[in-house]
Image 1 (cartoon, rainbow, N blue to C red):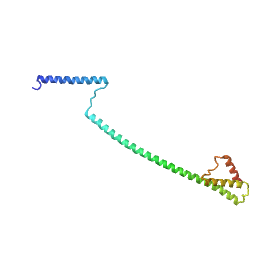
Image 2: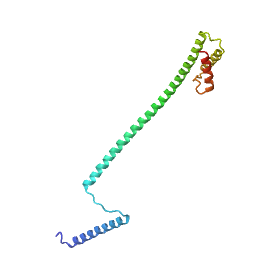
Image 3: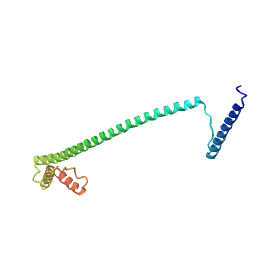
Image 4: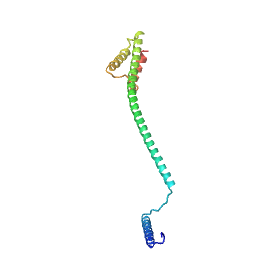
Length: 165
């Protein structure tokens, strides 16, 4: 018979004893490490796996997005460098144009002074020499940017300018 055989009972008792011994060892190990035995339902474990997969998908998407943003930022940096270079070029052109306009204003004043008969005044040769100095410097690539940073020379130029009005 199945349940009454003495050899079966001895094997059952030995197996039960082995299972209890294994459980005791596990409990001792858990107690030593401070861990606890936890039981989890398969449904909860499946939900954890699903959340882990969702997190992996989000992480991959975030990584791709970060790479796209980094490429976009690098592109903007290159465009910014190109625009700064163009701005420097334009600034140089603007400085040259402003210098020429200031020189033309001075030359126009000299021509008007000559036309109205004030070329014999002592201020005229000084102003003419100053205009020629500006023209010579411009030919060398230097720009006349005004005398705002040289108050004494600006006062001198104003005195000449006003004397020849």
